[in-house]
Image 1: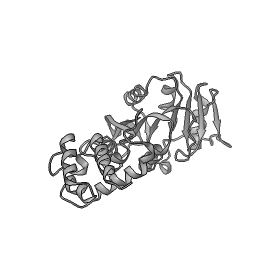
Image 2: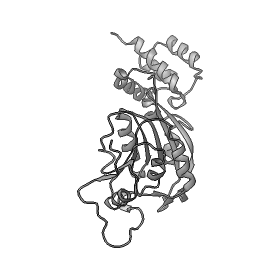
Image 3: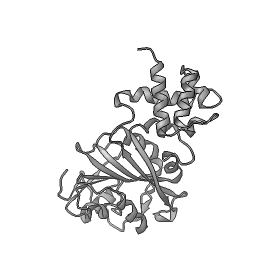
Image 4: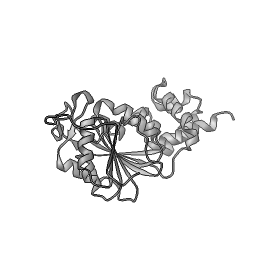
Length: 273
């Protein structure tokens, strides 16, 4: 990644006139609350590796991130915002005009920050999970999305499917007043870390995720019965439940990461080789 300030695009010159707020057609809600900005930057680990910022906007996070002294690549699709940011960014920032869903990340390890456009939340998360290299992602997402990913109030299928490889933490709620234009809902600060040691081998990813989907969508009065219907012996289900503190009548949403992994391992032992 280049340490020289640049803006990679064919023509990013601003049109005449004043630059208004975030482009509505791009779903931009620009972050303006300095306390939220400071907290977001504080969640970035102190490490000697590059930073990537998706949906950089006008640089509310980019410039504070640059002060960490690490190379930063700021990716922004709006040509006016990218042009402005390219002019004011310091020398350790590279501005890339492009679609964050198609952005080619660095080949080396890096950390990622994104004020996620709300209408792109699910595609951004799915894209993120399939990328290798990043170690921590600090994301600003819709509040309910942040809660669900962090399994606050119950686990969702998407979280269960990726828990063996990532941890999810909810740092705080971000009020709608922190953005311009103001969105209709609050946001949350979500921190996702790649596990140094996966709980399930990467080679088993597809099989594990199919298993998690089968359990979430399976029929039965509680996860004990669902597991038994998938072919796990009832005695094995009881041993699994005791080992993981899973109460009778528990639902898939009640399981934590370790219980999911142990359920998968128990199921795998029953499969013919």
